[in-house]
Image (cartoon, rainbow, N blue to C red; front, top):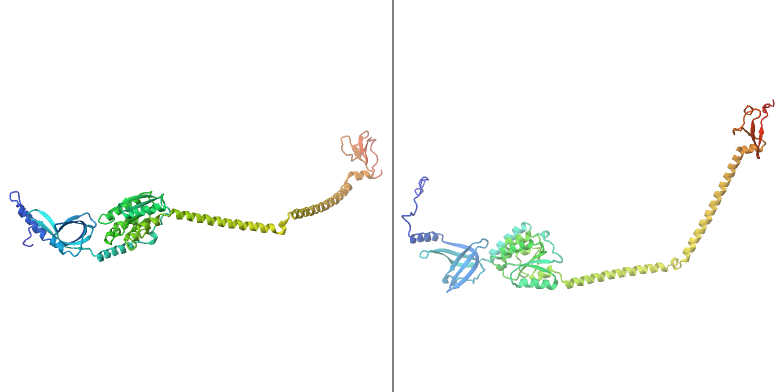
Length: 420
């Protein structure tokens, strides 16, 4: 254990007590000594205030991402040595020395030197962020959504009363007067740009009436457009379900929002022309389409008329009598053929009938009667077959070849077959 270390069980006595307080001068001096040991530090931030008074500049330096601001002071001698001009909104790196004023009890951040953040540093940071987002696939072409052909409502994120807002509204309404807008004003540069643009994109994306969102800003220098390369803005655009159109700056300006947006427009005017169709052009297209359809239908009808005329000009269609004559010949042939077939059928049927009649006559009792025989029937109608069936006095009915006679049996006689 070192000599300066107190045993764990020993509590250091307080520096002051109610009976032995520090004088204010001692307390202030100790604060000065403590702060003075901090030395000088380099601090990066954005100038949100830059006011000169009698050569001395009083300003404020705000953190680039967090909600933290410190007041700074530049003596006239320091301002005279600055190689560049500075203004509100600049991103800077300052060499700051904290100074505690013992007599007044105030803390001052004295700036020893000040310089703009190098473009190279910013570009390096942007390239690192660009590579990271590209690796995540946020710039992939297959993620980009198609814009609606005719949006009924367009969301617009832009600066209040800006030329970009006027350009988008004027050109869109000139092309399609019925188009509707939901405009949200946001800071388009400075420390408020990224959070306000992010919030505006999310708000419009949540609106079911908005069909497409345009984020528009006029031209500006590299640093003024940095807010549209902020990771918060880029990710808000990437996660939006509504198509996003980026119209930031001019043709040469390429913030990261351009990479993730579903469509990049070179200017706000170009965005209006890309999002909203021209009503006169669409009417011309409809007229041209109708003309093409009418021409094709006319050509088709003319072709069919020609085909019908060619068919009608053929000899077989020149007169209609041949059809009746041909059908009459066919009918006459059919009748003659039918008559012939019917006669043959009748002849065969007559021959068969005659043959059957001959057979029938050969088997008929009438033929037997015609040979001189007779049929004797008892009174009850039964045929007399034996003599003992007709004792003497029995009435008999004799059927002859022609007609019948009644008779009475006189009794049995000899057997006709034997002659006895």
